[in-house]
Image (cartoon, rainbow, N blue to C red; front, side, top):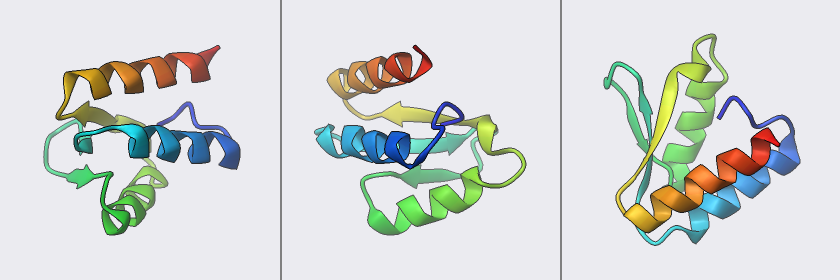
Length: 80
């Protein structure tokens, strides 16, 4: 998520999440927090956590391998 630089990137990220067939999770590195990004309520909670000081310590996981590849490609495109 740290590569999301502006509102357009964030909108593209949510579009990528919405295009996934399975669940997409944002998880803290220590495993204490997990947000299902397919849930609108969880999205708001995730945004709150990401805006905190240690927001870059979260990872994205997908329940579907094809979705995982889709999200990896999305992050790669953001870095370019």
